[in-house]
Length: 203
Image (cartoon, rainbow, N blue to C red; front, side, top):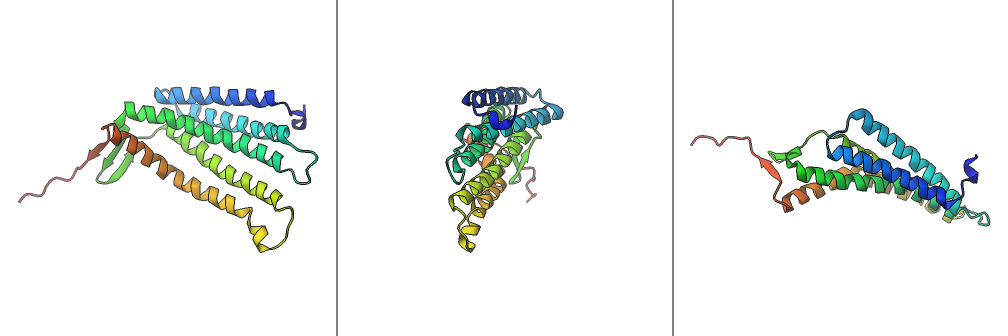
């Protein structure tokens, strides 16, 4: 069956439920420290594949055949694809937050430097969320391109690049903001571990 015929909202619902099941499995195993690298890669690939299908199907559901520029279809593609990845990253972040609260020694501030224990769950959060932000910028750029309705000129030609550049900026800042949030959670709960290894110099 061609993807063009997948215009049923029920398919979108089933794809979203499939993504949710995989994400919850990913998060649960990561929280319990039962996750290995192969599993993490498998879950990430499956989530990415389902997100691609979700974007394609939602775009078909929202597709407007009467419009000269298919802005609704592009909006559906963007929401289905990047939205699925961003929501998945957010859900995994909740699992990681719970894991860090349970095991606060995995994040330590030592000599004003942040030390983070390796975690496949953390890698999945970073990969899915960063890719989601980047694709969100590309998708919005595509929408803007349709909205400018073929108007020429440097200003109109550069408009689609703005969301894409913003997506890259957000992608590079995401990890920094995420760890600021985690540290804030640990500090608020009194669990933040600050270690100073420098011995005091003898007087």
